[in-house]
Length: 248
Image (cartoon, rainbow, N blue to C red; front, side):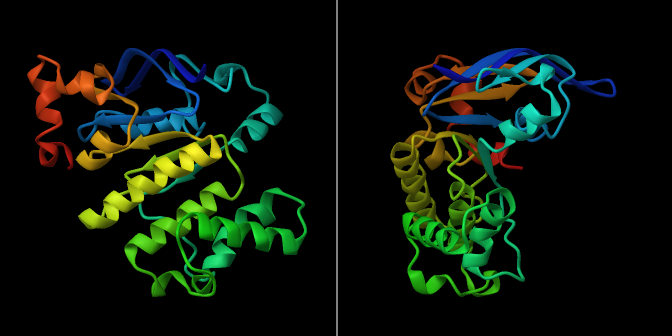
């Protein structure tokens, strides 16, 4: 079952073509990667899926809803079905860890305060942080802990889809491995569909079920890591071995 369908998507900025009639789908409960060099249109696709940027040509279906034909109420309801984890966490510096996690639930639900607090503590535990972390502030956290708190906030509302923007950026190799394992575990436990913008090789090889590589306005590759590694195409092979050339 496809949870997201991209059909004949074309995007242009001035005279520059970012996406040239591209199509792909993302299946329910898979971890899907959007890969490509700087300026290849990775973030633009995600912005269109989450309705932050208008679709110019083509269509996107999200949870069987055509984004071109939504009423305002339908759009609002649909936005509650997904969460977004920003590259550097985007935590509120003036709120404690537990308050950062609670903020979405307070804003978008009518749950009682004690239940919101219990949910926040549960998600904190799910991302591998101790209860005594709850009263700390972002300035007191390591980079890896900030990512986990942001992840806890993202899953607290029980979304069906989770978008991650370079989630392991800035993490050391061991923290990257641990974070990727956590994403896989949460995806399975919570029946999440996860879409990741990444260039990290460990994430690509150990975490993604399928991915696309964007290049020259087209989808250059679309498939699994094994299919990519066995590809005879040199560009695809180089992408998976020369990550530094695509990281900037």
